[in-house]
Image (cartoon, rainbow, N blue to C red; front, side, top):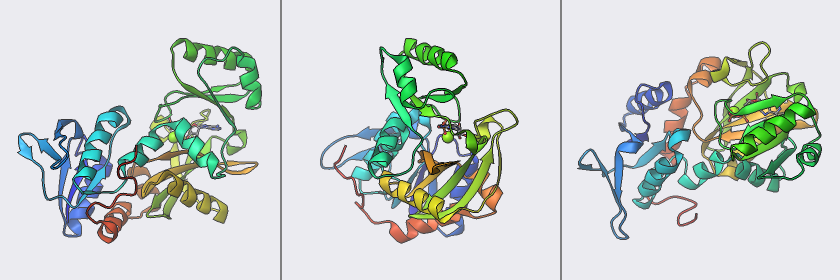
Length: 301
Ligand code: ADP
Ligand code: MG
């Protein structure tokens, strides 16, 4: 196969591992900086140009689109889809996953366990909204944050009100969520490839930190999933329409709750924690499933 990896930096661990795994399995692979791609949007012959060259002959594309370039990156991915190139994750599914509110609504509709979550633009009654999610302590999140930035724990009602008002003053879209205290600053990252959980790790926030993100100094260790956690992760991936994703789960008193589904999960933490060749599994998935013009969401928004 000829595979394109859409990534801004070929030196990143995940990008390097995917390239390595593809080459090892005998494929031709190219890393393309998504912001350097430009497109010709014609109805008969959609094309993508790259540094003066017309791209052609790709069988599959692996999107590793950073949160800050979601909009343009997805447009390029959509163009690959229009050209019939098989995407590891489809542009529509990536768009869904990048919006926390949209993701939670889709998961809620199918009965996936979630933390009680409120969303508001500019409520007149911040107190009532807080009451709706069970009062303080509460977690307040920017709708499009990543890596733990933009996630705040408000321990008291007063603190929660000021944080909500401050974010609203900045015209930011926010989520207000029940704080799952019993998770103890830990969450579980389940890595799903092709509808199966192929690896899982527990991430524990550093001392005094409720956020478990590895970027915020959290540490990873092995964990055994319960059957309920495993099936929750598999179902969440299916609902989002993602072939490869990281499903983040909190262990709450009312069972596993999904916090978010990440469409470009980092491979470094999970490969190191589990010693599994996840990049290899991803390439194998593409080998089995790639077909020209095979997208579930073609023509849909
Ligand atoms: P990001 O997209 O920035 O990673 P998350 O929603 O994943 O944002 O939140 C970051 C971290 O904060 C999570 O990994 C988890 O450890 C903690 N966290 C988030 N929401 C809650 C919650 N409702 N209850 C307890 N901990 C939470
Ligand atoms: Mg997260």
